[in-house]
Image 1: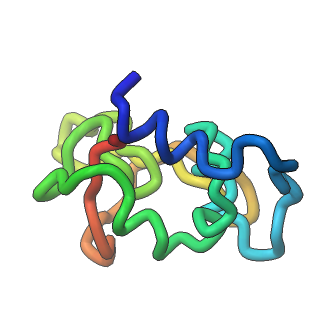
Image 2: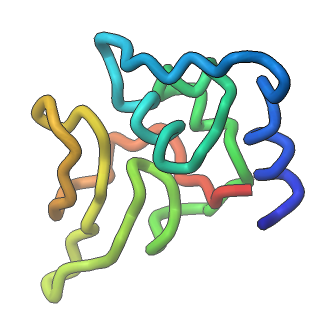
Length: 103
């Protein structure tokens, strides 16, 4: 595991981590998925500074999580709170605020 990810995951170590799902929970899902203890990650915008820049969409990059591409070139994204559930589907990444590699 990269040291930067280990550091972020350890934030909150030694104290109880609040994993309770907030009302707006897309960032919270990513925290749970990656094991990040920092509750600031409940806000989707926080992830724009997580890890390192991916300089555009790539499989494995965080937006939700880009898991692949369709034969016609659309990106497949797995994300939380997409229609009130976790979904993996082809979707536009045109409005994404950042593309990040996990630390």
